[in-house]
Length: 229
Figure (spheres, helix red, strand yellow):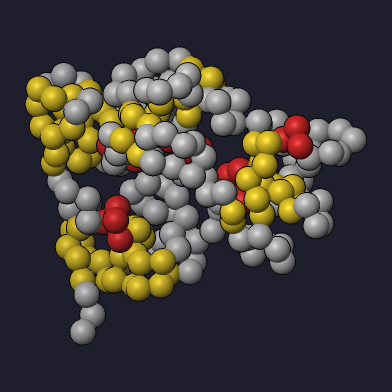
């Protein structure tokens, strides 16, 4: 039996469930490539969501804005109104602009991207020995993992360690389809190349504190290039 979903943003046609989507088309909700479980419209080419994005709750209470409930919103609704479009594009938690779905409080003009809304309060990662805690306010910091600046860190209460949420998700060992051996998370200074290491997936210099590396083949990859599907 075919699973269907009547989606709040696409009332014209039902969305049909696919257990193993392989197209890599961008999700209409989070704007990331879709691989795996998904919902898509058979009538409207390219209209697709990750299963998790399609099934987002229409409203929620969030610790970043405890006084009022937040409503799921698509800012593309205001594509013809530049002022409203820009107002809803910036996330009040991470400070960045994105066209992905967000949760909004219309009373306070507060917005949070769906990805920011789903971040856990505390996490245990492979890249740090202690539990890390999310700070739900903007604060400038330099990530101790990649060396890049950010403004919404996970912090360690036991030591002076701060990290991006995306960096915290990096596994110690990773297998990529364009290399035969597993890649290991490695400090950049331990990769002995004459110049700055070159990512062999995107062919650009690696300028982060850590990278993925195969010592057998001297194969280098950016953190996020290696984590792409």
